[in-house]
Length: 330
Image (spheres, rainbow, N blue to C red):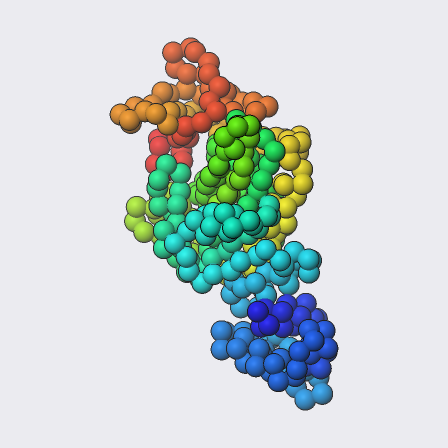
């Protein structure tokens, strides 16, 4: 949309940018530029105008839009980015785009999800105006056995994006929860379809939800979840900046695949599960019973080596792990 292109130009300018310059760069009339600026002001952007000087963005409001995110990305990356005020699930929307021929690297971002999805069918709280709900389409040439590796890579990519955008560190709880101060700030859900004859992954939909500016959580989540804002003096963070860094990080991931050397080293560095007392639950267990033990190491395939209380050792490739001191596990 024209307003996104206008916003991108105003965002990138250190000072005023004239309406004439915008008109010339975009190949549209001055009237069209004025209309776009009016629409942006109606959305909440504080844009001042001055005769003979042009337009100036007075402050950076925390608004997620194609224009605000694209301002931090190369012009060529603006393609295949889809933004929505509200969707059922960004993963669901991206599946539809993939079915219509969407290419690897297609991104869907929403300000709000009515049916955000977590692992094992759980819901993911997705209030408007607070978080980033982003899905990334990736088409790796890999077997299905690599899907859990991809989820671990994504955890590293998001941690790196948070560091690049805000200068803040986070940790990873095996398999893919991102934490600040031992509470969850990010969830990742990877959904894959497999090509029947080859057994290779056809498409991967990587859904990422980051709690950025939430100020409170429902009672059932308050002991588990937090936001970047809560853990940093309740400051408001610009989500557009983080969203752009997440796209950059996921693009790097796609380019690096399948060389895992950086991601494995970084995953081990950020992981807080190793060395902890844990209870492990298999995905197939239906009785809620788990096995207790100690997490020893992250293996080269991103599985978790655990020494259980009965003296046995096992490499966990999937399932869930409760870490003592996290999420109410004592």
